[in-house]
Length: 73
Image: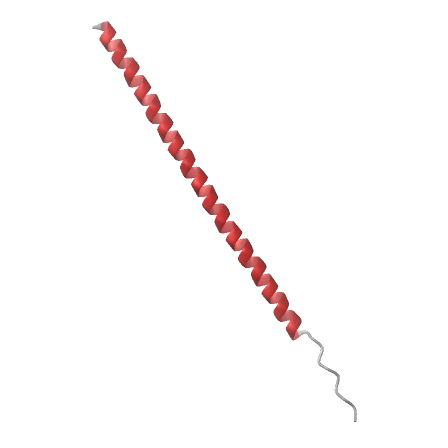
């Protein structure tokens, strides 16, 4: 009887540790996925910011061009 209880305790301990390890692995995978998503969003935001800055600079350059000098007669 003691051997059976000892065996059950060992099996329960191993099963519990395995479940904890699986939960830790899932949490790590979720964390990596969240970090990848955040990095992707940051990259898109940076690209959008750079594109807007380029467009603003282009518009500013177009509006600050000096007018052609008037022709004298």
